[in-house]
Image 1 (cartoon, helix red, strand yellow):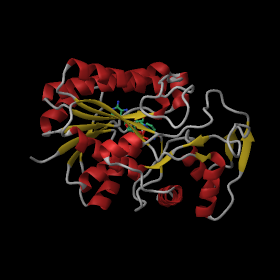
Image 2 (cartoon, protein in one colour):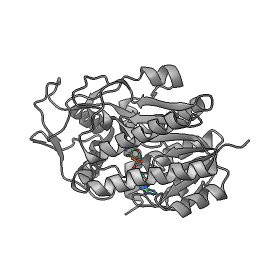
Image 3 (spheres, helix red, strand yellow):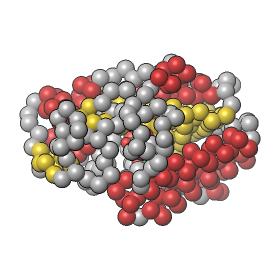
Length: 338
Ligand SMILES: NC(=O)c1ccc[n+]([C@@H]2O[C@H](COP(=O)([O-])OP(=O)(O)OC[C@H]3O[C@@H](n4cnc5c(N)ncnc54)[C@H](O)[C@@H]3O)[C@@H](O)[C@H]2O)c1
């Protein structure tokens, strides 16, 4: 039987790379997206990489009837659920928007899946579910305690999925806790294109690199880390995309709910990342040291042993490759807008 995957949020950063990986692995892909944070141009990027244009449903995942129609139209066998809002800062100022969109759309999705008889789902969760009192590296059993509405929305969805698996053994649910996705497809044809001022470090760095932003603010250089700046676990988005395939493969033979960290297991400080980007762009990045931000955890990196043993998945790409590929995309993206 042909494998038919629905990718919610498939026009977005992680969803588009995952769609490419699925098509390359022989899946038929249906992208469902409301284009809230993406553009239909992504379809052209996917097409030029894979030679195939995914089916596209311009649909809001909270619209029950429209989502059911998508399941009626295509013989979907599994779902990758990346659709969601992702700004921690915005979630603090507008929590109901985050709970309504992220949780509401997930409920609509799983109800539609039940109606359509589809029981395999891989969900985009986040390392933000872990408690700041946990000690790195975080394994999947580390204490969870999100400190903002965005992280809480992910945590609640994880709990909903765990309850679904308890209530009905037919569910095959994979929860992927991403660490810090960066980079872009090596072709430079798809990547991350945040609207407005970026919230995340790498897109911010890239906009300083092209001269769109003046300098990079670094929040705190007095943490207990070797250079005083915060340490995170950056993972190449193409490695992450492969992780979704590995999870789908695992779920072919396993019911229940399963949690995996996707990261490299290695930490890189803010200043180290700045240096890597400087090497790629061959010029210095202007920086500005600022006070620590409330809520930032000094050191976050993943224990990736479970994904390695259960999924045979390991991140392949180095931090150099992440920076080089992100830069290639940034240049292509900026050039195409001149
Ligand atoms: N990028 C990261 O740093 C990161 C880290 C951890 C987890 N995640 C999670 O991974 C997922 C994908 O992240 P991303 O970086 O690709 O974000 P993104 O914003 O690039 O992609 C999300 C996509 O979902 C779509 N969308 C949002 N709400 C929708 C709705 N109600 N109906 C239909 N489409 C909707 C948006 O238009 C967008 O195309 C998100 O759920 C995010 O929370 C991302």
